[in-house]
Image 1 (cartoon, one colour):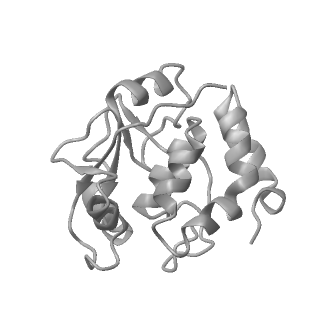
Image 2 (tube, rainbow, N blue to C red):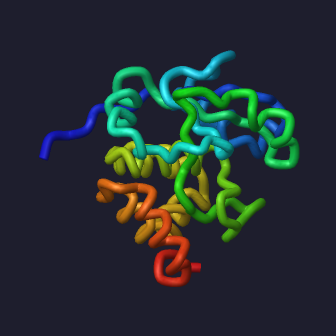
Length: 175
């Protein structure tokens, strides 16, 4: 099977976190993401009504333009949640966090977890592993979510796949 080309990763930083704990800042230091003022390509937004990979063009768009994560505090989601909703906004299907702040909580992913999950679902598993490898807890994200991520990656119907995962939570998550 041919090697997948890397997807360009972008971050819109709100600079609300301690820079020492900010996963986006660390990825930037390793030149794995570029900070931008406005989203580029597909934008990860947990308030989007559309799931990543729900539209047939999502994978091609991510490969062509890139993928942007919004690096903002979950506690201030009312301030930024609707700001970046547009035709290119996508939310991730049900996954659980491995980061120390929100460990085992559904949907409350760090920026690196959101980017890695997106990469994995779009078939760039090795790129997901590389960005997660920069964090002690990073590889555990893939371990906790392995079954769900595999289902999402292989699924032709991501909406049904998410429903399957949410109805069988204990089967899909290794907590």
